[in-house]
Length: 302
Image (cartoon, rainbow, N blue to C red; front, side):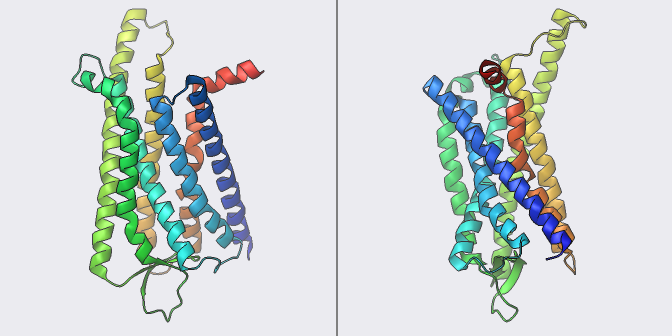
């Protein structure tokens, strides 16, 4: 192992350990809030589902990357590769769908009561759990091809066409047409949900801008009244969605560059992998920063 591999190994280890710890902390926090209220709030339920997806992403993809960075290669067989990559792909899809659900839920929540969404607000909390179940079913079906196309590390004499070498696993394909269809379906899923969350965030920004102008008109430019809980929640969701969209764009562009390179750059590939964990590892800090209950608990305990 050279100094670069050791450095990336340390970066993987720190990022995954911090990310898993913070996500588990949030899961415990939301569970505690639910035990106090005797039920989960709608927002906590969605955020808890997102935190669960983040945890699965970090564990299923992060731990193998750490082991690979520290020199281990053939530690997973075909079955292990299929299970880990399948769970990772499903969790990644869940993260996209749940972030989209969060943005749509918050957009409807802060919409004016006189708007066409007024009738939806009362029914919205009852749709959270069915939506999460639907997301699981949808992603389990869409990513089922992973169980067929992921195998353990393949050598150059393999009869399969290696599409992507993950060092500890390989993505193979026997049909270019099948690969194209699967890639198209996955891309449409991602673009659909990213587009919806972008539209919902844009609507929230418009509502918040109108709200700010009304508050400024009522209280005058010299006053800064405390923001309503719905406004604070909307700003937190917009920050999460903005982070996700930026990282999604970065990942898509960098992955396209890597796949079209004649000679793969190990440095670029490792940077791509490190940045790929950014949302799952650091989005919980945005959730913590935007949750006033954290500060209240800290004041009580101090």
